[in-house]
Length: 146
Image 1 (cartoon, rainbow, N blue to C red):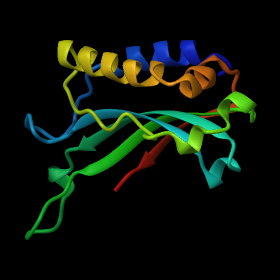
Image 2 (spheres, rainbow, N blue to C red; image 1 turned 180 degrees about the vertical axis):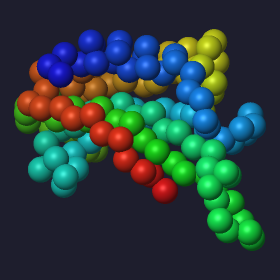
Image 3 (cartoon, helix red, strand yellow; image 1 turned 120 degrees about the vertical axis):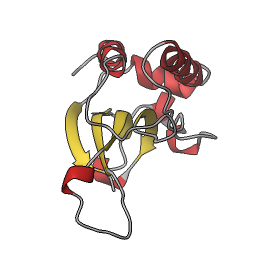
């Protein structure tokens, strides 16, 4: 992936898709998303941007514990890693490093939450510079998160 705007557009479309098999209930935090940015050791301290969707999967049918229950948490992430540049020098010193998780259901509520995330990304010149940069490399991962 070499275009952040195209990646974001694809991620937005992914966020609009309902997913079956998730933890039931309106307060289950079964389907959420977060956008994160910063410099991390696993990316050699290079600037990075991640789009993540998290799912709480209902595993009651296979759960063997009798005293407690917890769904399985899974994350699908697109990680974009960028070359260093002067405009990105303070990326790890911004007042926030992510949008915070949002668990609004797909539809108007999620669309509003996506708009809030976009506002967060657009208000910072450093994040605007990151958004306009071309990634060195990218990866899509599916990992268990619990």
